[in-house]
Amino acid sequence: MKKILFFLILTSLFASNTSDIIKNIIGEQKYTTYKGLLKETINDQNASLKEIITALKENGLIDLFFKKPKLTHPTFIFINNNPVFNTKTLYETLQNLGYYYFYPSKIIKKENYSITLEINSNHHIDPLNFLNEIEHYGCKVIEINKKEDFTYKIDCENEIVKAIKLSQKTKSLVNAKGEYWIETGGFKKAYIKTSKYDFWYPYIVFYDKNLNILNIITSEFIQRQITLNIPENCKYIKIRDNYTKENFKRGIFIKGLQ
Image: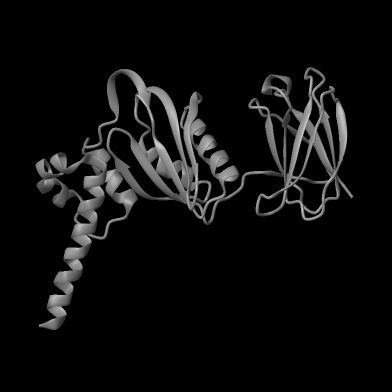
């Protein structure tokens, strides 16, 4: 009898957890209206967030589109966070989804790192597409809430830093955004040469493995080529222009030196 009671309690907890997740995404009223359909569609009461989102989307229960474009303000909360890489991951994820014009409207750096963006669009970010895309960076969406806008809670404990690794062989890199992340790979120096069409005023930041800044190099003079001394314990180098990405978007040539 005790085993049966325990099973019923556990099942009830799973059901409650799943229903709470659904309510957070589509709201109490819509959940009540479609409760019967949802029970048939999401029959696993311990369904994952991705399975729930997929079922809701397939049944047209997530309202994404507006009658006309308007400003939205999605919020992204990062746990196990590192604000520099979290922001980089978030922006790249959105750009991979086709969003290029968005602006931070609110940033909070306390126990968790939170950033709210302002986006002018005719629809919300598709939560399933966002969830799938950010997983490519080793991050996992663990909670989604929707009121007027979506709020995502994201675990980045296993975040993958997408940086080009230095080698003795010269690499040609092109990034129209005018920013390059380099993994030092144990080299003591790095040689950088710009495109002959660019006018590069260097802004270079050296980071350790925890993204603590070790040194910053800036210049008010145009450079065509530069050899950098890499600080001890440096893991990553960020390279961009001191003023605007327009000065530095046609590519660089880079290699490591011992």
